[in-house]
Image (cartoon, rainbow, N blue to C red; front, side, top):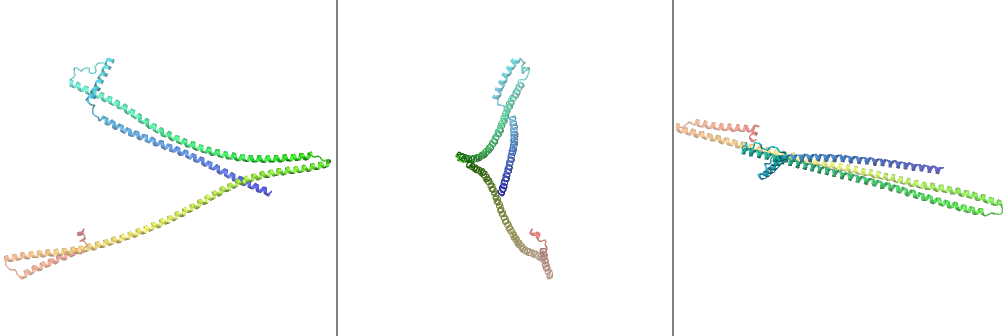
Length: 420
């Protein structure tokens, strides 16, 4: 009973595993169908986008062709009249055509009052009429040619679009056929493998059945031989027959039991193989998931190390920038200090120069005044000593006052405007 219970539990586990495998296969099939639907949708979307692009390109080409047509039309309208030789040929042809029309329709002459008109006016009217006819013919031919060119361009564009669509449809059909063929090959391989397994199992059961039939036939032959051997006494025969029957029954029971056990062992072996295969698949999945987790951990660790390295590089670069900024500020302060010192030195030198020039100018003015006084004295007589001393003192006082005023001006903050 315990063995049967264990066997039943094992069979239930195997059936559960097979059911899970069937569910997983069904999920995989649904995912494949969803993937195919997604691919079909993407293909339709790409076809729609391609059609839209082709329509836009066609509209753009038509726009450019219309612009080119209008430009050519303007250029043709701006063209001068045809040469005289061409005009004369056209005039001769038109006259012949007019004569034919007049003879056919018996219409009056084109110029009924030709005798009453001035020859110059008549010539001008003929020329204007000829130009109008020429322009009409040229315009008609040009319009016909432009229509033909437009039709040819549209036909060419439509052929290119149709060829591109046909190629894409052929490519899509080819890919679809390849997928269908691949699925058919996989299905045929699966059915073939299943049929091979069924054939092997059938052959095995057939061989077992043949062995059982041989054993039964052998037993029956032995039983027949034993029954044919008759003894003298009836009791011994009956006892022997009973014993033989019991033995045969026991052998038959053992044989059937052996067959049942062999069949159960075969089924158990197959179930064990399926269970082992399921376990191996689960172990492979578990190993793959573990390797994936380890790989993710390695990647996360590498990313953290890379981030730490980047942070360290950023911090070092920031320190380097701060150091460079400090050095630049220090250099700017030194340059500013040197500039201020040079400006102060230049200001002092300029003050000295201005003071010296002012004193020289004052002395020159004083000397000029002294010379003027000497000249005046030479004219009017000798002045007194007090007058000369007063003039010299006044000159010195003026020079001193002028120099002090200049120094005061340089001490005030306004002299900076002089340098600017």
